[in-house]
Image (cartoon, rainbow, N blue to C red; front, side, top):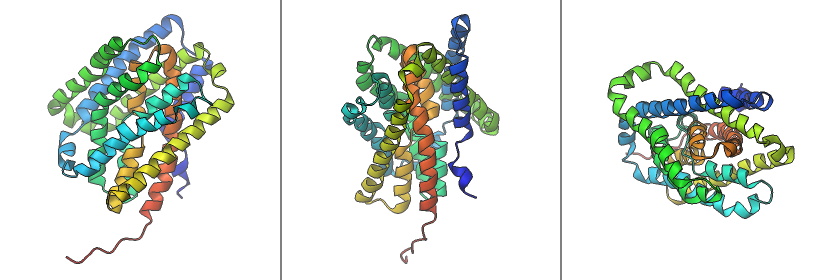
Length: 327
């Protein structure tokens, strides 16, 4: 009965299909230029939708539990990036510098929204706090992820202009996001009513960016640079990163005195990374010839986190109810 929970989700299956297509039929020449312009437009549309969908009420309502939210944000934007930096000497023994750049980028991304909330609900955690924490992580990630990339990642990317990155962040990410927030009073209700097909627009944007990025990477010799042994190493590294951050969030939340429901929220919101935010950000922040390599660790981590969190959520959810104190 529970077996389908551990199978790849639809987005992951489509991503693998897109990577396979790009590996066999990469776009080149005029077609590649056209797709590049289209992805720029789709990224702007995607962040406009993010801005229009984000409910400020959900964020404000959960701000009272500030200790939990600060803990989640520190795990997402401080502990995780430091973990990537500390492991650098060991990681560069088994993967290339471009793949390590992908690991670092993975470490600075915001948390997921839908899956963090869904797993918290299955695990019987603090769902209102999860809604607030995941929303706040994504909102701050629009600003913090590019900032952290500029501080600790651009230094690893020779020849990449910091000014160019800042300008791209402003007009491809921040301006559409702010425009979406401004437009929310007029289009928010319409977007809430049309979530099903707007989600398709969201996912198709991600798939298009992945296709263009991996086409460029394949044209640059991606699969010659990433042999099967290195791919297996990436899977092991992704699993190790997830295990370490889950151990930190679990035992750290207990040491800080959070109850079980809050612990669950911190574990799921503080250990997950957003593929939906990461793919368009990578297209904006990195040179086109490196985007495919940068995204590979994120795609592997995405599927591993879903499978592990599904198992963990069921274990949390099956725990016996605790007796509540009288009064």
